Length: 425
Ligand code: 0X9
Ligand code: ZN
Image (cartoon, rainbow, N blue to C red; front, side, top):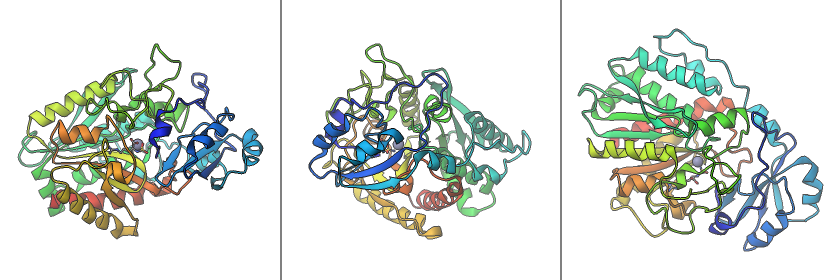
């Protein structure tokens, strides 16, 4: 998702009406447009303010100032009469969501057995993901453990799986992954699960993987925003934030990737409006999810240290390096991070030719304050701290809704990239 500073700071008159509890928002007949806005973003935003049903005025925003919007079926004629310069990105968002496929039931082999690879043929409900991790862990008790770092707003465990090799539990520097900080980015949990799966299955089988697991302790958290993920499955497929309420607003949710207590206070990279998709919260680190994650991150930093952190997102096919808060700032080891990213992009491209763009987050995408990777770089001193935006490219209209048939290829190409990185770094 891309936004400009102007859009981030503007109070959003277009916020979606709160859904009834448990009601599933339908996007049937919603048409997604990319509006080329040039320098006229503000005036276009004013014109769009009339459209109560524009659900995602900040659905996506790219650097050459194109505004992506989703328009409800009954408002399409009035929108088209505006005569804006548009390109249709999706004829029907509801149809895209339907094409994603129904949530499959988990084909469990047995409680102690390695799950079947059919897991990667479809999307699954949150509880099935928990069972998947429990089963995978139970199959490799000598090299893995499930842990919790704390609880979400609604009291769900923020869980992870810890993997280690021959040095024993906790003996090596950390490789640290977060998935699903943004609820609607469903592909991220699947990719993180595939990487976890390959590390365990190939340990003592493939010499490169054996060396990797002997060199690092992995701390993999597939759902750092579990409430948001569940809400995206039960109520609103395109939900992004957590599910925290605030006494000052009827809008729900804080963006956990704008709430980290580092450079949080700077203007321009997050919103102070609780109705915005990038709401930063009332104070740095004031979401329960963030408190738990900061606390756990510091435990790793104060232990054997963090070698690599990856925050998995979608979409756009980017490898984003520090920093988000300032477009001129570069990590002290930027040259090395950049050259590793270039080789990782080449490794990702090997299986299917998928192209990933790499570079510093702010200058490649947009400004972000209070984001995880800036905290990991400067406060937790992670040697490498990347955001990876998975498939599809930013010109796809249904970006967060990736067909289930792409779960496996997305995972396979990321596994190639990660295997390269873990051996070379
Ligand atoms: O805006 C975000 O949080 C990320 N994009 S998304 O469309 N998945 O929401 C990008 C974060 C990039 N910022 C940093 N890496 N600092
Ligand atoms: Zn994201």
